[in-house]
Length: 255
Length: 236
Image (cartoon, each protein chain N blue to C red):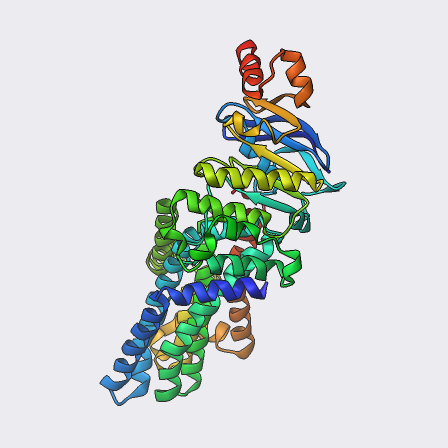
């Protein structure tokens, strides 16, 4: 298994996209921290980078990578290797190299300029979101045979998680504004890993006081250390469930 | 050695394999013959586990292949269209395959074809720059590389020049004499005459007959495989 991971990582490093992505993250986070002396303001600006760009790059790069390595996968499947091993190695290779890019591009500047709890939570969220979106991308890629369709599905999924879901949540809130919705909102936020990441980071920042009553509810639910651990577990579920589904699909796929 | 029992596979509405049963024994050299789209490649891919049949099962050395993967150690497969990672060199592809199979002992490797095909001069070329024929040569070399007990060759001579095609045919005959099981599909029947011992004829996903070459020739009264198959096709 390690051997396949090695070949996947070497292959990813050979095409320079991941390197460019690392540099892009480094430049942005470096400049964000240098614009202002106040490092907590810098963290707030980085929040959007982490919550929007990181999932977008992870999902699109992984989907395209899986489609482009269809020849490699086909070659491996005719060899004495377990299909599950091939798929999991691809997952580790992709999430490993993208996480490294995030650690280098976002992690190093944060540790340098703002080595606080908030900063560390933000790095953790960036890495977790990377892995989650690699996992979702692999599911999208295994479900559709057509490359254009698969990439389209991946973009739609990203759009759904980063924009449409919030709209949907607001819509539901307004429709049911006469009812107590706080608990339901907490549950709903678990349905979107980006939201969950945003809440966990914001709760570590001072501005969570600005979130009003629902902010207090979130603080009650996720602000405690048990709540934090539960939220992390939900995010891990977001890694494992798509991964498990794609694994099941791949082990029966006709190549 | 390989037994397929009632294997069926459907792609949408198309029945690619319809209740196919066949037994392949060590030491045989079997030709899979049939018109385009008759299910030959699907049958081969089912044996390799690349296509999962809807019903029926395939055993290799008495073991069901469904949840097994180690049996592929004993198979050398040459695909109809060789697909390789485009930005790897030929050398890297060979090293990767040896690395994956964890075979470093040169005695267990058969690198004869690398030299006889002249690939040793092209080792540093990237796969995407290779012509179709050179890709076929790489595929053929990979199929023989690990001295497998079973060789599955899907259209081995298509796209090869006459010299390379002769080299490959001689190699196949030598491997056959070592008592290996060889499965070949080909449309160039004249290539098969001096190679094969048995014929499987398929049409529309069904296995029409499986008999020895001699029996086929006496049944049809022909001396050439191509004529014999032509008379079978005309009858059906």
